Length: 223
Image (cartoon, rainbow, N blue to C red; front, side, top):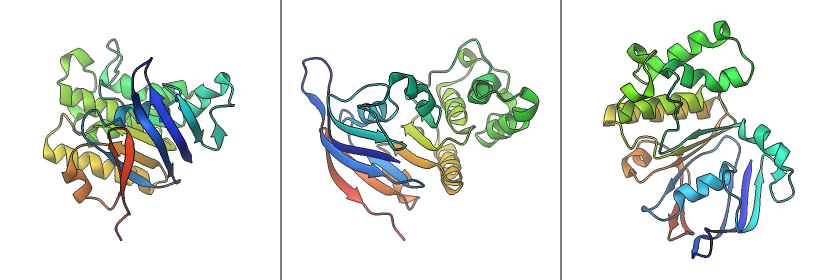
């Protein structure tokens, strides 16, 4: 599904943020990306989501070599990916319901077809009473849960989540991990960047670790 070979990344004339990163995400896998702040986790996710091009190396996504792909192909590739950003990126003029429904609307679905799904998902993340609230009236943790619901509502082929439990309490974090696991069970490949070791202890997922831009450690999926 996704392949990196000897990928390096730098911003401008600065030092490389990622150095010789080589790994694969197999279809249907569940992986945690760990490492300290500044290790390069967010940059790696940006490369996966086609937000940034690598400085060097090969990236293949859904069988498409990004170095030779046409830019016109990128929107279709992105539509197969659900992303949870650290800064949420909610649309301030839309309600929680409409923010979550946005991927479905862009895919051409009608409100009567998706209304129940969106309401059910917002209920699952604990926001059943906040359907019509605008982002400015939501707490940071509530905004994060809206962003997560938006990322998963269309059952993407690939889910990328950057510190998705950073602003929520332990009970909500556990519920969100169960949501990711259920999505994975239905076929979505999941990659979660986190520094929260307790999340890893509650799952059977594989771990990939970044240290100063190098991929230095892997934990095989537990039986």
